[in-house]
Length: 437
Ligand code: XLS
Ligand code: CA
Ligand code: CA
Image (cartoon, rainbow, N blue to C red; front, side):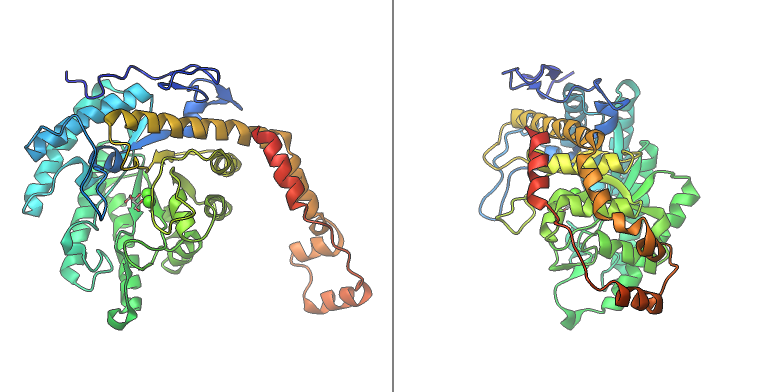
């Protein structure tokens, strides 16, 4: 069998002191943290699109990536090489899952019929690999945004034929995800948004998006797909106004359309940044609504206003993310998918390995610190004490819905000399630093 990552052996855990760049310093898959192994906690996944489709092209120049399948011409043979490369990479990294868009794994042909045939052929090949490999599919999705037919969106297009085409594509992508044992199915609203209201019927577009998602729910029931449906919020890019702006917007939309019980969130760090939220904020909003499903583990650049999709290396971010995941009770069907791409200057195939090691170590370290923060309880105790006024007396009555404005006016007239306590933000930031270093 051809090896695509020839210079790479299986990546092992060597611990913090190791100077081997091809070893984990923190990710020790079998190490137990609070009763679960790191592998079970973190559920890493490789993202097919950036890892095998990414070329490093940008608006100023073509791709720079040098890849082992560069000398293959036939698109289907390239697709097959990428399947082999995917299983090899996941196994060498010890990454238990991968994720894909339909068009990442098989090339689009000139008719939908032929495109589906290409997909079936590659899915059969992936199934063959899965017979002998432990690598599984975390989630599948449909790319209903790249092809020019989606210029005005997919389910929110002004053109009903495009709505129908997108439905056919998502139907097939769901079938394929089921066939490969995918544990989730993701909806990211590619071009579901608008550029200007001068040409947009916003109400119709949003209603159509709701109808489309309802059709997906109905079809999942019909075929017995029991994976979790996930929605991935993003505020802008590619359209100026994306309908799935952020978690709060998406939850409101799902509730309006009676769909909230069928969906959880797939939170991407870089999308949180674009929405002017922190990654932790998006995870917290999901968690308190019991909708934290999965994570697209990357990071953005605070100095740039676009989706840089960098590999996650910021330990503060990974720590606070894992704090939310642990507080949510851990992942069930979800995981940490590296929706991240190499910088254009990191063009060698081996850079894919270094990048994943960096991301895996950053989340492993984050997990350990987050676990310590929760176990130690200083921060949680502080928060609990800060809201203690709601545990007795008038606060408890407010929380239990026992009082209204009249009772509260009576209380306030008798208790109008207010005393507040400090929020102690700097103290808490220093306590966090104490856990970090
Ligand atoms: C794009 C999104 C996309 C989704 C899957 O910004 O991150 O890649 O994760 O369609
Ligand atoms: Ca993503
Ligand atoms: Ca992104």
